[in-house]
Image (cartoon, rainbow, N blue to C red; front, side, top):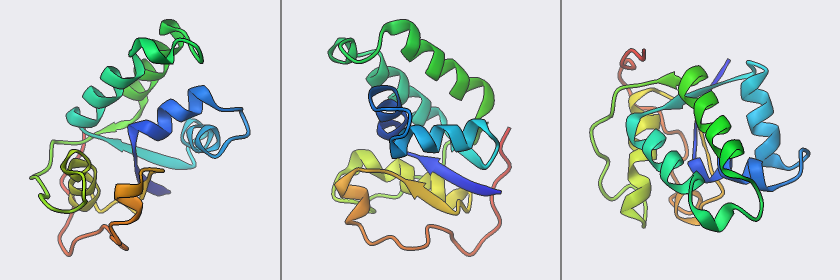
Length: 134
């Protein structure tokens, strides 16, 4: 199974876009157990903060946001907060995603964020065993 760190923006885009959009297909792959979604406390916090912003109400209501957040909290693999990876991307706010992917030896980081895409990270896996997730 593919182990992936999914940028919270991708999860929110799944609520905004059509059911055939790439973000929705990623969520479907996770719900169908074709990928393992790796999350950390920081990722869950960002997802909650962003998904509940009033500016998104024109695309989805608060109940839909809470349903997605709840599914992620219940069914994703919760991992310990990794050591920071400062300077991994242009935007320091994205560095925690890189740190999580490296600490858990994720197969990929899924994001539409230019700062992550332009970072040229290639393989996020380090040369050490992963820490255990809950």
